[in-house]
Image (cartoon, helix red, strand yellow):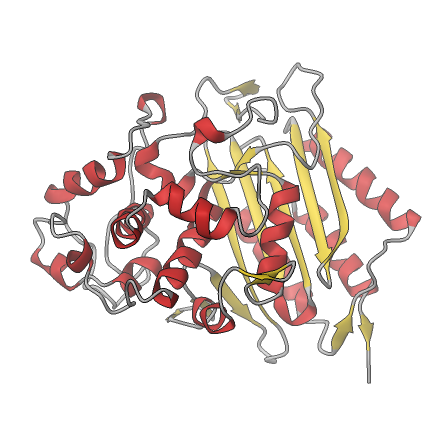
Length: 376
């Protein structure tokens, strides 16, 4: 499903070669079209709820919630409703690494063992793993096989203990030679962030990213989240049902446990649209922005990776942007930003199964094309 979504988005973006301005306000007809589409997609997929935000030129073009927070309930999803964002969490890790470089507390070429002397594996190649390798999924680290959501840990040493538990693991490839998506690598990065900053991973992200960006209802630490705003996870096995476990474990905070909503994620989108500055406050420098979104590793098939972000460029070299998707038990999410067209959107769902959202994405792309003034 996510592959279909990303393919449609990237192909659709190629048609906007010279777009320089997107009007802020949708027509009432197009707003009604989006409303009807979201409602029909929920009905077809049986996902209980979703929230969507569309941003153009730094302004909110469309932001709404649909459906309910929990199957069988009457509490409606709104743009303030909290979802588990899964792997979109990793983009905050990449941002934090960029900030720590800006603060001169680490470099991309630092070895992991420079910051975590207790990091060991039975594969001697682990000694060559750098920060760059981890944040670009090129470390050769394997992936997490069990997140133990039902045995969630909350204590502050959870990440360090997880890193120490990796002694029996073996690498899949030589560091720096191959792209292999690894949640495990990002748990290690979270511990690096903690040790380099002298703060817990969650506290560092909150202090240096979430709070400066005004993301007041977002956190990687589940107990911080207002329970009245939270949605519930749903699965389809075979019929749709409420999942009995919310996906949280502090051992896997960096890779997976960001909880946020459309209102806050629009601020995050605009933080990047403004190259690190939001509402007159600089969260990170333009040089850090450039570093985060620089191609650090080229992946076969025409894509590449920055610091955690997946990058895309059209074949005609007329479109540039970044994206990241997320999926964990009970939740799916997607963030796409066409930087060169100042157009981005965030999708949040409180259900996780293989449904085809290509129709929805086709309409979003058509609206983007319609509202772009192409100047000669």
